Image (cartoon, rainbow, N blue to C red; front, side, top):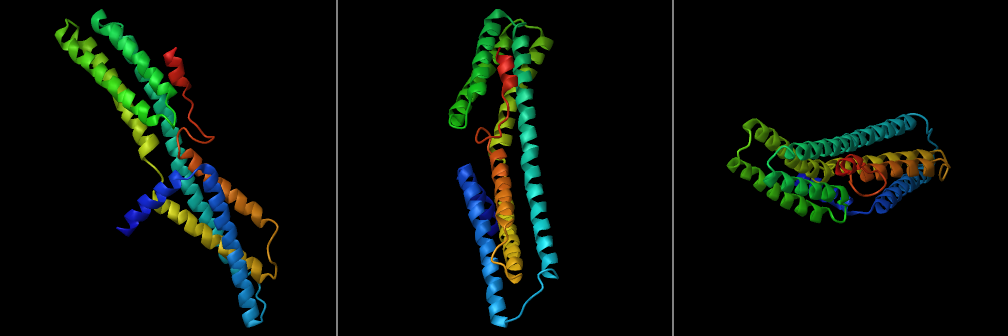
Length: 263
């Protein structure tokens, strides 16, 4: 139960934050961890009144922690990149399915064919102009058009239509409807699990504290390159969060295939 709460709570909480807030929060956490580690090292030095060689074995431990952090970041980025590619492929597949259904509708009797083509033009327009702010409205309109299209498909049973042609049309229409659900599932419902986010932030805190501890043991308050490392890490986390959110941020899937089929 605890794992399930982490998985849902932390993941949803991060997805609700604006991207700039994800970057700022990660930056603050990492800088705070470095400072905490450095302060702990200075406290240990004052208490023991000894000097510790920061290279061994502490340097090895810090390198291993940073390597593990890099691994979990690569793993998380791979998850989001795979879904980004899937979203691109689904846009292309949906555009092809709509175009195929439109062409096959031209072979149907005018009673159904003209109405189906009109509905498909409206459908392509809804899919093309859906944004993050209007996603729910676009989803409702899409499903409403699905119902009208399927009603027209059922009416073909009463018409004298070649069975093979009818089967081809119904198959392409069914694929169009199925791709709608696939885009919703891949784009909106599947997210990075909260346990993965928890691991990323836990490892980042431990790694940055280890780095700060090593800096403190060297007798320095801070290293000049540390802010660069922290900023780079925070940007990477923000990039992952950006890719994870379709229709938001800077990384977006091109809707050009749908624009082309709408033409």
